[in-house]
Image 1 (tube, rainbow, N blue to C red):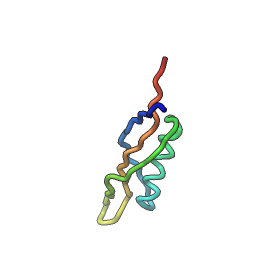
Image 2: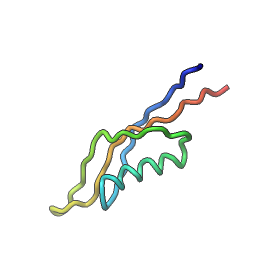
Image 3: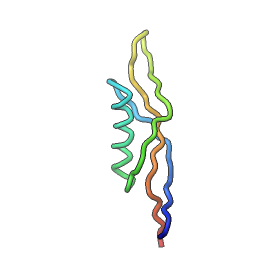
Image 4: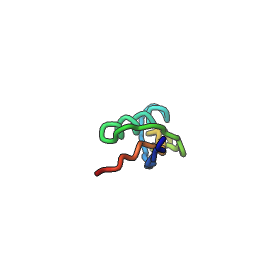
Length: 71
């Protein structure tokens, strides 16, 4: 049985409503161009502030996907 190899990339998603939506945005956007996404790990959450109020939520995530050897 052969093993598998996965590549991991870091993404930052944003949302006006929540960290969950920010993470979802990042994964769904990446899924439009990356194939076979496997796991997403939230590594950091922060938010932007404007005039003393929360403007947006940001979720930094590591996403893994299967590495397919060409050739």
